[in-house]
Amino acid sequence: MNFRTRCVGKALLVVVGIGVLGVAVMLLWNWVIPALFVGARPIDFLRALGLLVLSRILFGGFRGRGGWGGRRHWRKWNAMTPEERERVQAAWAAHSSRRAED
Image 1 (cartoon, one colour):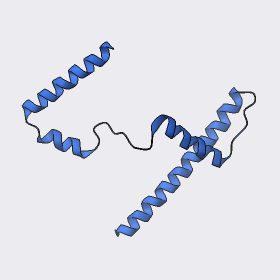
Image 2 (cartoon, helix red, strand yellow; image 1 turned 120 degrees about the vertical axis):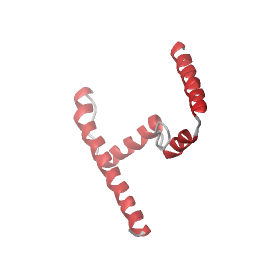
Image 3 (cartoon, one colour; image 1 turned 30 degrees about the vertical axis):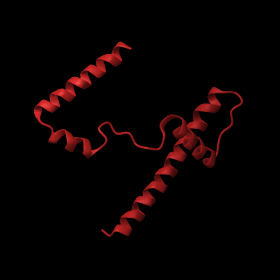
Image 4 (cartoon, helix red, strand yellow; image 1 turned 90 degrees about the vertical axis):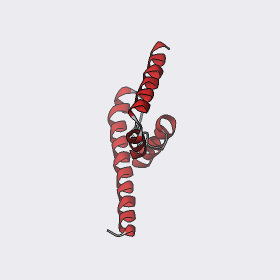
């Protein structure tokens, strides 16, 4: 596949994904909120997209957070000696136990 075709395909996928998320937010809002709150009104698609962006800003940010952060960390882990791995695991266990005490 050509680079330009892949870029156009990814851009199209992003646009479709945003549209689907917007419709999902709109449908959920219009289904739940007016039933829970007396004065609430249904929202349209653009307000649903605005609500989606606002919730991402307030609660999630716009960067993905994937546990190990991708292949780079796995490569680093695989390059470690068994002693280094044990030290990392011990440090992680100590860190986890300190967080549990708080």
